[in-house]
Amino acid sequence: MVFVPSVSKLARFPLLAVLLLIPFHTMLVAHILPARLDVPPMALALWKESLLLLTLCCGTMVTLAHRRVPAFTGVDTSVLAFVAYALLSLPFSPSPLAALYGIRNYSEAFIALLLASRFAQLGEQGIWRLSRLLLAVAFFISVWAIFQSTYLGPAFLLANGYAQDGRLPTAFTGDFPFQRAVGTFESPNVFALYLTTILLVVNTVGKAQGARGIIWDAAQVTLGAALLATASRSAALGLGVGLAARRLISPEPRGYGRPHARLLLLVGASALLLVVAASSSYVAVLPKHLYRTFTLDDPSAAARVTSLRDSLNVLREHPFGVGIGQAGPRAVTYTGRLLNAESSYLIVALDMGIFGLAAYLSIWITIAAALRQAYAGCLRLGLRTRAEFCRGAFAAVCGAATACLFLPLNVEVEVMLVVCLIAGAALAAAHDVAPDAAAVAPTAV
Image (tube, rainbow, N blue to C red; front, side):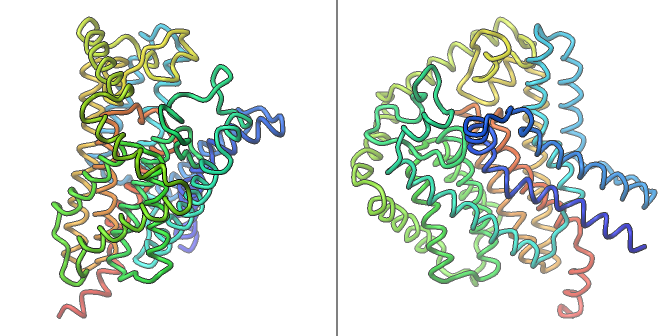
């Protein structure tokens, strides 16, 4: 009887390790270690898959010990249906290697979500500890991001494997007088989505715990400053949608104080910190960058419109897709030709057609619906920290889904794992409410 709970607890540790360490994967494992130590990247790159497999093995042992298969949920059904469709399309892909690459990109994060939703159970205090750890990791990366982009500049990235054809991709600099903050991720936009996710989740859980103080606010301000330094429009839009979704799912309880004034204060302090720590050029460039986006004078915004039109033309000619693994910014490595779309959903549509896109969208919809239902269930039981964890995860999923509309972020496994593991942990916390519910029930009588 002691064996099963201990194995059940062991199953969540690999998932939490992936969640906390995955932000360092791209810079350390994919770039610095292979370049500096001459270590084959493939020997290091599978560490996260190994931890997910360890969770699967531990979870299988728990299931066999209980002799009871957990009931399937809507999220399980939607993910398994999409994975099955992807596997069925594998024989029709022009390149089997590219097809396996596509299946891994689209499915790995969602499979991690299924594992987390069953084996990443966290109590009220466990959620609070995880939120502080997530904030601490993001704070460290944000400080590094501002320092690197301001004082080390492109030379550091060029020396550590970020170059393409001997130079940095235009996404890092564009027509800015500064290098956009990239943190430890592959691109500024990926880093921005990571910061958006952490801010939405941590800020929401912090409200439930009544977190205040100079350290708590300074850490969030630093994340906000790093987010501004990425100059990512899609992540900023995702953050706005996430905040709106968080507000719509439930108004702020009165005990939380004045959220609007506090939010404006944090945003203003973030901008001030960025100017002081980095460069005053942000003051002039960022508003101009936003204005040029709305008027389509910005080259990248105009290129996105062109890419959207071209992708829709290809989809019109191939409504059932061109073959999984054939589209996306990195598929050229396996196919030898670039077929990209500036939208995660269009990439899936180009690969797997309209039916594959419908299956993919159903995953996002069922995840959001499950988190909303979990929030309502925890709130009825008076488990405020669990409820707010679900609400923060719901906001993060809405923000990520919005950012994916305008960028091919679904192929960035590192940030997708963060979003999906948080969502899975929130669902697990909502399902495992019996102990805390029993503790709350007497006080409600």
